[in-house]
Length: 343
Ligand code: KG4
Ligand code: ZN
Image (cartoon, rainbow, N blue to C red; front, side, top):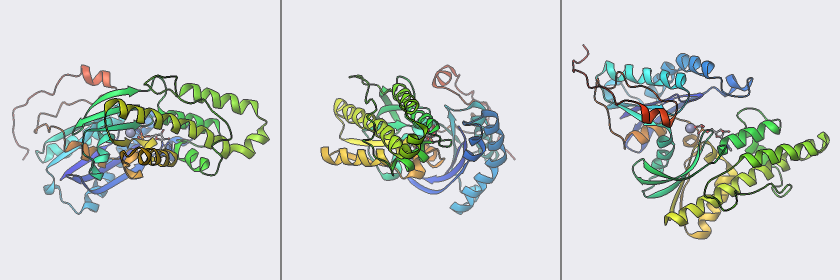
């Protein structure tokens, strides 16, 4: 039984996981809190995590029907993410683990997203499209949560493209889900937005965002009003086409016939439909995690933890969070400590 905590951005989340079974998963979203600013305000996020985290952990333990004694380890997102937000989760996980002399399992957020697919029983090797608000890449997952990046975005992440597009279309923050819902009522053939980067392996979305900006500028406000859903559908189709095309090309290059998706954008209905159709047509296996495991959640952190080394008590006490991958590489390993069990 692993208790997992995730607070890397604007969702306060805790879950209990046993092997690949999710016993409970609680996510308290801060979306409405940040909506008025049009983006996540780091300090506001940290403070809200601090207010919510104990309640969310207690709720996850309660829903799983567990007592503290039932836990074998505590897992937590170590990075990348907002440093203040991460530190709240890390301090919480350390305190819970330390009080009971339990091991702590630090987890990389992206490995967590990928591991969401293990709830569905996927077997490596597989190619995973990781598309979130901060990352867009193709990862060849070799074993457990060990992966190799085989393509990545050259500019914006796909989630950013959704959020920026949503803002241009006058939708709320974060806009991905709203844009998805609006697009469902529109004609994806209404505007032909630019597709993939010529021949490159990597993804690129910034040109697409600019194309949307110009398209909207050239139309009368009344026309935008009437065709908002059509424009949204066309914009989403351009993002989805690129994601699907590059993912299938990546799978062919890597010689992999098993595909998976991860990250908030994996919740997009257009992407899920297009990937399902493309994989069916080519006889490829596809793992599509449920929506609750696509956007940020602690269950995925617990699912990844199963595949990662645990730091024994009390070696993790001075473990640091990291905001970026570069910081993670530069970090020193945790110091070994003399062991004296808490009374
Ligand atoms: O993985 P995630 O929850 O957080 C990060 O690690 O970034 O991803 C959040 C991103 C946001 O950009 C959000 O707009 C996008 O995922 N997203 C969606 C949908 N649901 C969430 N984008 C498109 N369609 C959706 N249904
Ligand atoms: Zn994420």
